[in-house]
Picture 1 (cartoon, rainbow, N blue to C red):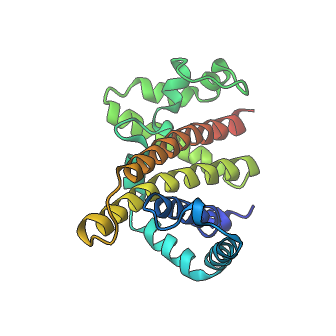
Picture 2: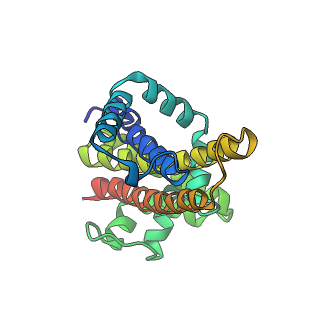
Picture 3: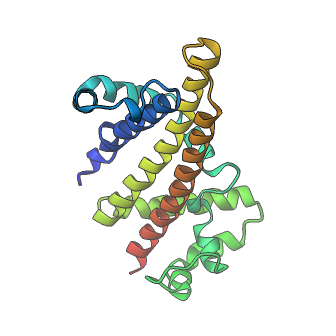
Length: 221
């Protein structure tokens, strides 16, 4: 995977996800029903879906929607007030809050002894997190073209953006149903979108942790 293609999921997975969620919302709204499906309707659905996925119209819509939210805001949507893994990775390894079978605590403490010396002299939690993240990012830059790092980075970014897209779809649904009254507000749709948000948020947190540890593993091993 070339580094320039790391966000190609916007035109693939993210677009398909938006389309799938939209179809489910339309089903909840009663716009279409399984009871009314026939061969002709299935063929029509297939044609419409394939057309949307293969044309730039849906892709452009998804890119615009995804770009509305800044990266910092996306991170807050995923992590809330919880620290991002890169800001505490060295402290967490030292304090045995996170472990990885690919490296030992002792190996990390030895390789990054200078970093730990600097961290021990910082009393401010904010400054300590800032330093940890800066050091981790520096290590990431050395290995960012490694296949494992590219894949884990892409996985995290995809799950992060899926989480943000759920919020965008929820806002759009509320706007269309409450403000413009194009739909009848259905609580089933709200619960469904909230459920999808929670699932994608958990996935993004797991992928972020894996991404951060992959960088350390690549550097230590």
